[in-house]
Image 1: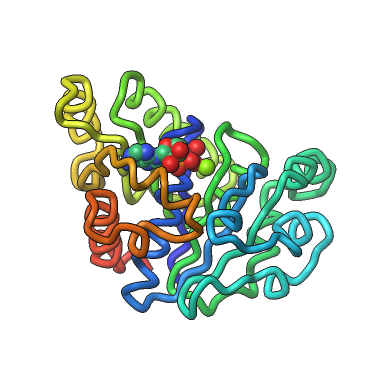
Image 2: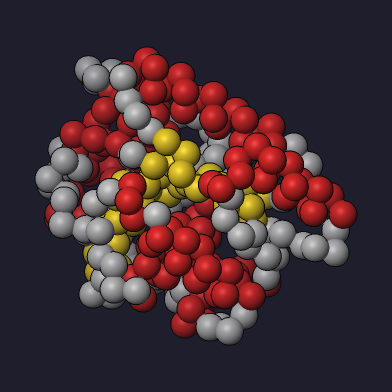
Length: 249
Ligand SMILES: Nc1ncnc2c1ncn2[C@@H]1O[C@H](COP(=O)(O)OP(=O)(O)O)[C@@H](O)[C@H]1O
Ligand SMILES: [Mg+2]
């Protein structure tokens, strides 16, 4: 089972879009996928028009069985939602012993999926530390714009620190350039810089595509909403690259 966190301390870089589209792509390829929403803004269930009855708050704070919080989007795509209450978890967990590994312990019975993908909030919070210590792989969406590389380097050093401090072995296994627009010079330039820094780990860029903005409002994924748009094509290419790297199991 591959345990992946989709993380970047910057907001608005495409973490949630990537989590949902990649999870949907993998599910289309008959992979069993569980998406964990770890962002108190709780976008994942609203994206699929599902309620948030039991959430990650209940799992992390009340010790509820994560199985009871799982919701089925399709046979292959399942989610555990979150809502704004999760921001309170941050404070409550601060007082718990081994507070950085609450998620890892809470999810240890979950082993029946091919992929667990954690959508992380922006900023380096206790919730994100929990995500980093649960996952084996970090996927980092990075907007192809000014200061993108800075955010990427910061993420790398945060991961190095966490690994050293906790004897963990999280690796960045995918860097995903997002919001790519080849008509904009800086977009091309930043993509070049990202490739220089992370070479084979860099996926094909995800192009700017308005359909990706519209899909959530329709309660569906990009593959159902507009299957031949650039957003769907780019996320399917990413899905195929991710599946090819299954040696990370
Ligand atoms: N490739 C893209 N092209 C156009 N809009 C995008 C693209 N990727 C994401 N968006 C939009 O940008 C906004 C931020 O994306 P989101 O995935 O929510 O970022 P994050 O989770 O990192 O905060 C959303 O409105 C989303 O629909
Ligand atoms: Mg998000």
